[in-house]
Image 1 (cartoon, rainbow, N blue to C red):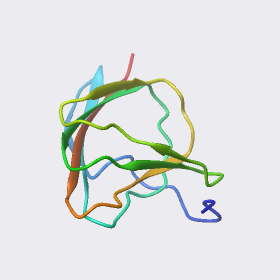
Image 2: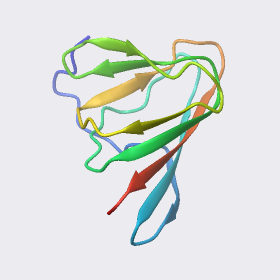
Image 3: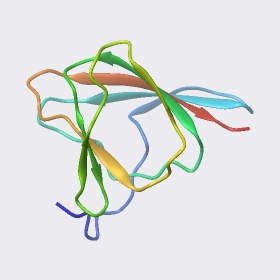
Image 4: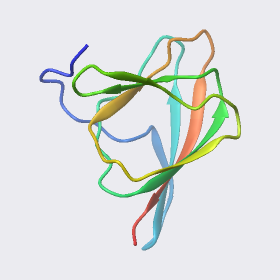
Length: 101
């Protein structure tokens, strides 16, 4: 479903650490839930910690598969408005590391 007028939110649940070079976030998405629509302004790395594969939904309604294995990491340079959908029965968790330089 396209985003519509939903406001943009934070890119993850909680900031765990921040300095002049990185910002580290914890993302938790409950079963059947999603994170808010958001936009990353910096390149970032995600590491999946728990949960079944998720779905990435882009602003225009396009959906793409998320990471498939616990421990899998991805380096992201594409900055599009999106949200993560957890269509599973288990909690999804990842760590997100924003690169400031």
